[in-house]
Length: 99
Image (cartoon, rainbow, N blue to C red; front, side, top):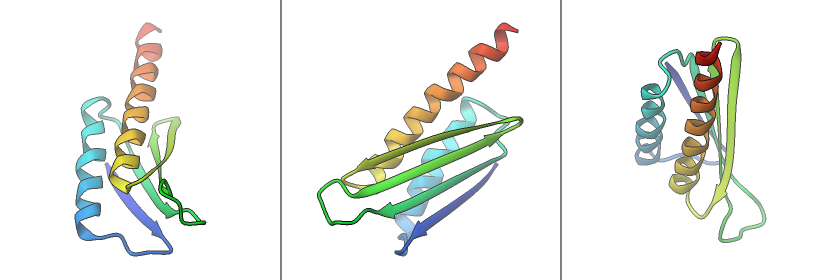
């Protein structure tokens, strides 16, 4: 699984990147055919409390999953996005296992 993190208009800290790799890496437990993961981090203007956006796109054979969340911190946004992706992956596995 290839993970790419892109921080738009700022530099992500090493601590944040490590956190993202750890969280996104857990998705392999749910689905082992993940080809790549792209994580986009943005600070939304104007400056408000909840202005950190995390978008995560996962590519698997013949399909993609996407989640985007806006929160107070990037860690929280990544957590919620990963949770949403877990649900999408579970649904996909249920559908394909029934066939």
